Length: 139
Image (cartoon, rainbow, N blue to C red; front, side, top):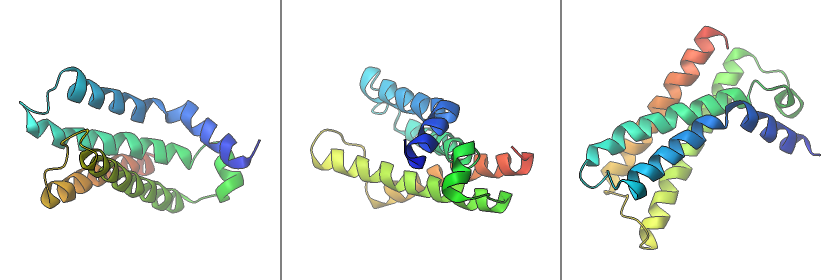
């Protein structure tokens, strides 16, 4: 089995619950309970929570044993950089997915350019918070 697959499986086993739980909560809020229409401001804390979840996932991805085979031994600063890059990449991918589903007429998630920029900032802030705390605590 390739190093990348072993690394991914180890990370999902350790931290996959966090982004999965936030995604399921998002689906419940959007499709199940349709809460985003009557409560549009619910979007902001969900983006922060998504950033926290993906931040934890990215931080754990840099600390599982197979990461050493793929990345080498990372210092705490190296883990922070890789973790934050993972958070930023995930927030961009999420916003692109919103844009795509809106373009296909499946959702109406995008509220314009300002909404997208705020969503990116909130997701990044949540991720920075958890990666920073994890690094500070030495986990």
